[in-house]
Structures are given as structure tokens and as C-alpha cells.
Length: 561
Image (cartoon, rainbow, N blue to C red; front, side, top):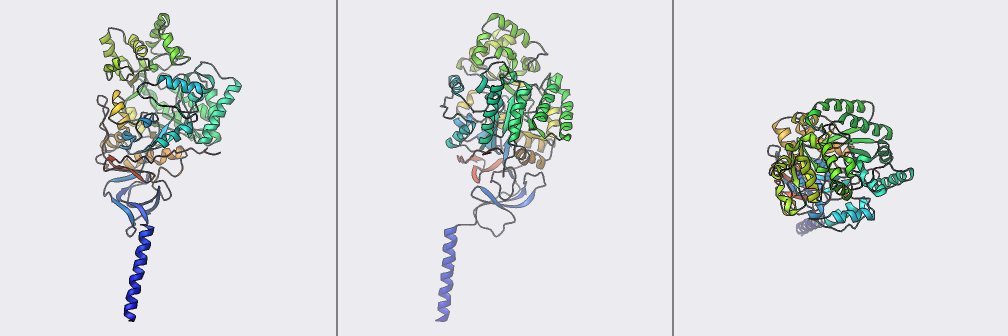
């Protein structure tokens, strides 16, 4: 009898334990095992396991006896923190397709918006102007603040996390419109107040674009005033500086002056020496920046991994002709006298404005996106070829295309040297960005011929420059895609594989990661990334998108202050 009771008791106990195990579930949602875990710090990889529960990394170690709902053993594949795209134009494209497919396929888990222009704060006139300019993709504007836009994206569903600077040009347009003048004292105070509001909502900092109207009209003092507000919240001032070409060195000096006088941290957007005659200036730029770092100024930069940039044909136009906004620009271009003056200035190698027409040359400028259906056949052709087809000069062709397409006309400009690209990559204070939208090779996206960086920037870094050419070690490249930008942006609990951090993780094969997009055929997804997790949710599985959209708004250090 006693033996029977003992046996019954043990059975009962096992039933209780089984019930509790079933009721409580396994200890973790996911355990990832790998022989090559890169924690994002720049340290050598190690073998081990990562345990995830809900949206966080809970434990890192051997974890041999731990239980999980899913165990993923990836062998020799690399596991790293999710990559940070330091300048993305994916915002509106994520309203078309929230999957962020071209970036997810490269391991990007955070998109950072806001070079000069941000999607808030918007006043009613700005909203009306945006609605008027919509063509292929139309949407309602239900927000006014920058944070409202970011929340709107998350409500629609996005696969990546998203963050943004507040755009200095957006602030300027909100208060001054697109006039070429200095703000009054009261107007500048209003601009600062709008900046302060955005910083409290969680903007990462202030970002300017000083070669484009209306940013080109702003003074150094105006930028210092806005950067001071960012500094109040420990934010960052990031800039597409006043010149990347003939006036590159004075532009760097201005940027350093803004940081010094505002007390703000700073980053240079997509660092480059643009135009063959300016390639030799990069060494002096590096020296200026590193001397500033030694003096105590906190400064970094980011870059993309191609010798060509991409922007609109407005970068071939003098700034004075663009004053007042798009409609006034086109109205001036229709005036024969003004048109003649613009053509003369376009062909001058040295100008007071950033002239990409002479910096690249018509044979090295390729049309990438036109809005008008009857002009789309020109997509992918060089400006020189289009001019020859039309029997007009290249400068005349630029103006005709802008007027006929009723747009700035997107284009690709071959401007940089391969040697300088590699030189910049080796700098420990340089992070990486695509400076492009996140796309998919389908639907509306196929109406343009974008820069291949939209599909391949990060895979190109890890494939071509790390694996094939040994420009920098893999662990250092991962550091500068993860912890380094996260720390610069003061983003909490992201950018490392560390207990308590969000489970933004990328798993890729270092021997296979590769970009496939080319300038001729850009709509080609990168390969080699097998799995991606965002906030603990699997977004990419065995190289295929799961359709999950767990992305969140990531906010800067000023949130709530």
C-alpha cells in the first residue's frame, strides 16, 4: 500500500510539474545558437547562444539546458545587432509598402529620416503644397507634428524601427516660407520653439541640407541658433554641409563653427569630395575633423558605398532662381532672359552655389525618375544622350526636362573616387547610410530607376569591401553599423547584443552576403541575409519576408524633457 501511495504521489507531482510547465510555457520565446556572435562592440566574435523573451534579449551564454519555444541553430552564420541606416528616405515609401524590403534584406532594423526636410512640423500651407505636388502616390496628411508622422507610420505597419531628425528646412519653411531672407528676432525665436517642441517629442536632433533651397538661404547664425536647441536636449546637429565640391573646405569650417558655438554634437551627412578637381581635398577634410575631435568637439560622419550620388536636377541650378518655392522656380525658367542667365551660370565651373552640372558633367548624369508618363522612356539615359536625342545643349535639356516633367527630376551623378571611398571607410568615426528610400522590385517602385544604394548599400559594404577587398575587418564594419551610430544618436538599448537590449538581430552568411543591384538594373534585392528580428519578432526567415510589421518609433534623448 505504501509503495502504491508513493507511486501515486510521484505521478501526481509529475502531473503538477507538467501542468505548471504547460501553463507557464518555456523559459524563453527564442534561443539563437551561433559560432560567430558579434555583439556590436567591435570585439572578436564568440560562440554561444542568445535568449529572447518578448521584445528583449534576456541572456547570453551557453544556455545548453534552457528551454525556448523556438531554438534556431545557425552554425557558422554571423549573428549581429540589427543595422542602422543613418540616412534613409524611406518615410513616404513605407506608406506604400511597410515591409521596407530592400533594407530588411540587408539586415537594416532602424531607418533614420530627416535630412533638411522632415515630415513635421507642418502648417496648413505646407500640407496644401504637399497635397498639390502628389502624383503617382497620393495620401492624406492626418498629422502636423513630426512625432505624429512617425506614429502614423507605425499605425499603418512597418517592419523596421523608425526615427527622425527635425529638418532645419522644414522649420524654416514653417515660419518663413521659402523666401531668401534672414528671420527676424521673433521669427528665429519661433523657429527655436518649434525645434524645442520636436526635440521634446523625441527628434534625434536637428538636420540641415545647406546646398538645397531653402536651406541654402540660411545663415551660419541661424544654424547655430537651432543647434543650440538640440544641445539643450543632448541631441545632435547633422548636416549636408554647404558644399561637397569646390567650396568643401570652407563648408567644413562652417560646420565646425556651428558645433563649437552651439555646444552641440555633430555628424556630417554622406561625407564626400565631389568632382574630380576636389578629390584631393579629402585629406584636408579628415585633418580638420580629427583636429576638432582632439580639441573636444564630438563629431562623426556617415557615408554610402558608391562613387555616384543621387539628387534632383535642382542641384544643377543656381539658388537664386529657386527662391520662393517650386512654382516660382518654374515660372522664372519660362522667362527667356532668366533662362539664358541660368544656362550661363550652369556652365561655370566655380560658382557661389553647389553646381553638380559641371562637377559631374552631362555624360556622368543619368536620369533616374520622371513623373510624366510620356517622359519615362528617358529613365536610365545619360543627360548627354538625352540632349543628343533632342538636338539641344545639355544645359537647355535640363531646363526643358524640369519644365516638362513639372518636377525636380531625379538623377544619378558620378562624382567621387573609389580611392576616397575606401579611405573614408577606414576611418573609425564614419558610420553608413543609404541616402535612399527602401523599396521592393514591384509595383510603383518599378516606375523609377533608382540609385542601386537603395537595394545594396549595406550588403555591398560587407561583401565587396569587407570580404573581397579587406578594406576593414568584419567586426569593425559591424560596430559601425550598430553600436557606433546608436551611441552617437543617444539611442537607448539598441545597437548591441546585450542583456536588457531590444532584440533587433540580423543573421547572415559572411561568405555570401552580396549586393546585386547595379546602375543599369537597380531593382535587385541583396543576398546572404537569412534571418532578421525586430523587437523580438521575425521579419525575415530563410531569406523571405514574413510580412510581420513590428517596427516602433525610436526617440531621441530629449523625449519628455
